[in-house]
Image (cartoon, rainbow over the protein chains, first blue to last red):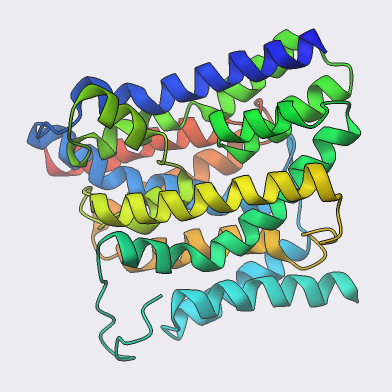
Length: 101
Length: 229
């Protein structure tokens, strides 16, 4: 019980501090142009990494499972310029159908 | 994402309401995953209050699942906290990137920063490195509420929603991130950063603790810097 609450408090405090660090320290200020160039490229770098870890990551291993079918469905939707909602629904449906089979 | 926009020229609308609207499909997934977090936490002896307090304060699913499964598996406090902090460390660079948009007094900035998670950040990101504060907050509030509702349902009501993975809801997240990534790949810098980020994540997943691949992938943004120098 104590260990659980200690974990809840420590992890809660740490993640709140990590999330707050940037906005509290430099919030509302315009960053230098150099930094903005880096930050502009942060979005594609992180989004691509999220796609990889959320599709192929499973603990400490890479796996090819039904999520990849969902991603393929989403990719087709993106290619056809379908709205984001459509591609999210298509991905979930394709993965659910593949798992049910 | 925006029902009124024409098929050829999607106009990204901004502001609090647009953020809420854009995040609604993800809210469904977050309720389901929040519920599975609640169920898992109870099954691992966390009781009722601890999972709810954790969702209210930590509000980052991956870290929460890590703590519950490590402590539940007898992994020890240190291992659980380290894993959770590594998983949350991506919010360092993400927080810095949204900082210019987050204004107000220090307590106000602190409160707003807690609503910045992967999904709200991704929805509000304009593609040039800036975010719309209204969109960020709208998405953040909606996702926060969804996560709390899900957690309470899971802790109190058990898993009557069923396994969210059976419904394919885990595939909603990569689909969101892909959908937000694709329109950004117009410049060579963005393309280089995306390829670099994906490659780093691919290579590191088998060799590093969870959380490290994504933090390391953020270094691929250097691609944008080097090319312009």
